[in-house]
Image (cartoon, rainbow, N blue to C red; front, top):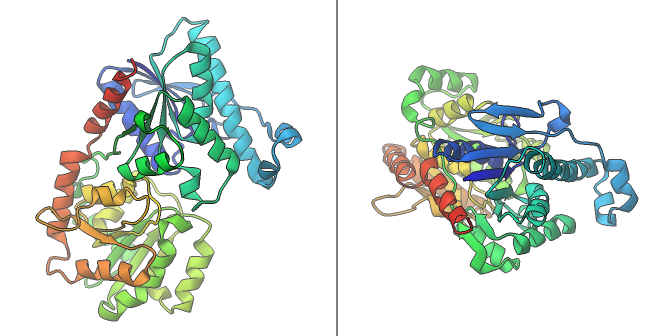
Length: 413
């Protein structure tokens, strides 16, 4: 197939799970013999407008700053974004410029053709809808999260309208978990058009055997964590829906029984100051290490390898690739399992194939209970971790994700 993806995140620009997903799925689609083209946002116009990356055509058209123009006619809600209106304007500019290049240059001038458009989230669906109308090409709307879920029911009405229209116009909607399918149905997306395709991970890359004992010990020394201490690990944006505030509040309950425990929090976000202040209020600042920066993938893998338990208490998580990464690294993982939460579809919480713990992320005491369930085990959850990696290899490889996605495309092509 000749596939065009609209993904505002794409390497080297990765802010979260979408960038990781886009990189992995496109490489696998190309590996299976498809022609893959990606249109991505040219962040600050500092990237090449075209490159071939691992056999994939990447276009990043230069965008114009439309912020001042948008201020002339944008709805009051958008103008209230203040300086953040530039981000919205850049997204619209990226979509329209990219759609224009695909239609007028690649197709009409260079006689290229495309079988399907896969547009990711509201950030790419505008361009997808334009192309479908112009070229009558089947459109897939790949929904990784929604404005309603991200903002806990609040958020931008404009973005909600874009998502809703995308769901009505698209020929298929692919989403990342059955929990997300239920959410989309409640938001008015046509149920008969929705298909579920879980995300994945590369178990050859996220392999515990590729992190040496020396690398683990060096990282723990950097953080001041000794061999006889437990290292808990959280990775994610420091925002409300990731549950990190309640995770910090859970630490005193954990320390009551396991005082030799430290929590490493890796991520950036608006809650950074509030979280640091909370740790001082609770007098646990010596047991929490904040690392508020982006680190490369190799370092992330070492963090998983060095930890004893990974804790991901999200209150809203459509899928959550970080969980799959932790599972692939043989780590017992404690996850939020209420509401729209794909974590609970990844983690089996009991039985012979148990690979982690489900908790109520709204309750710090329940988070603490889940962590203590791991720490009290004689092997600190190593057997659970091995089960987790087996589940990844069986169910969450990028090969299976790519094949499932192609099968959904074939319904339309």
